[in-house]
Image 1 (cartoon, rainbow, N blue to C red):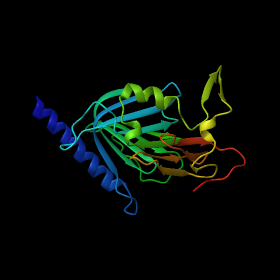
Image 2: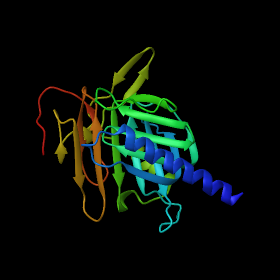
Image 3: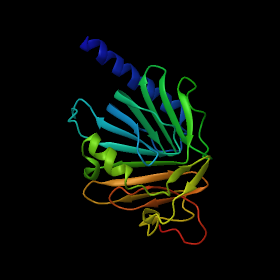
Image 4: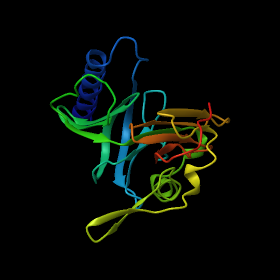
Length: 224
């Protein structure tokens, strides 16, 4: 049974690499392909978290998260198990088996059409975090990252969606700010984060893992 599982993982990885190679323009940086145990869950702040405990021949799984993606405006999904995650700017692909998985693309960004074999969604924000700051258990990150977003949160009021005001994480951005479609920041100690945002959002990056997208507001300026 173990060899069958290993073969299945290899097939998924090869398919992910092949699809990334043919779907990504040649002038873009090479895709980041991660394989391991993946937990996907919607946080209480209505952001979808994709937590990856990377596993390679030289890096066995240790039960702690190595890479995090946080999606804004994504549907509520839940998954826990082996998967291959591929990231290129403005797009995240999660493959859980041959021709099975999801593609999340930042709305309004020009990219090749996603793989039709996977379920595709548009999102308003895609944040990426890695390094010691997030090298924790999935349960810990689910709580901490869901309570420290960089975007106004939407609360359901009857049939209306109201934006909560006074959201400090969207202010005093170390990198990014109003007018910035994306940002990235090196926080030292091997920890960094970045954000890709839709046209109606601005990117805000703050250490150690406060990268995300905020609703555009009047005034303010971007920091580079």
